[in-house]
Image 1: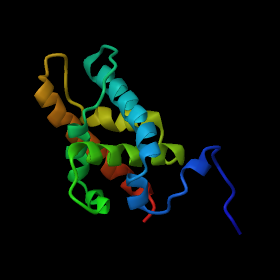
Image 2 (image 1 turned 135 degrees about the horizontal axis):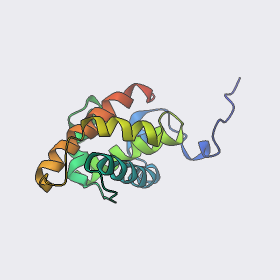
Image 3 (image 1 turned 45 degrees about the vertical axis):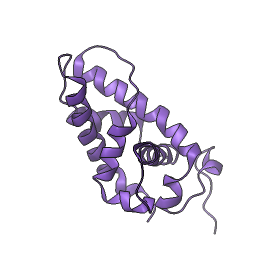
Image 4 (image 1 turned 90 degrees about the horizontal axis):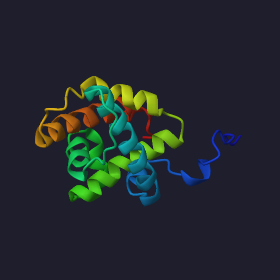
Length: 144
């Protein structure tokens, strides 16, 4: 018996393997917005001031390259492609209802030990570890 649709956007996420998810540019676009929102909220909580941030591809690339998921890309990639793969995974998980904005912000905040005096370079290093740990936590919710 076919599984009933749980979310109205299931039609946009037909993938049943990680490689296809990571190469879906539409999921990457949705994931980009989610990643930026979650990071902005986590950074706001860490610093005590509201902020809107764009997460650099290099941060997400460093994060995904440090996980076991990176081998699913199937080839060496530049930072933009690796960052897009990370964002596609986040987009997929959120659209599937496998995670929430609140959960991701909470997980990022736990590892985002920064303040207003943290240098941009150091913030990027800390953020990469926070995004790595986020993905490692969510990885088990992805299809095989």
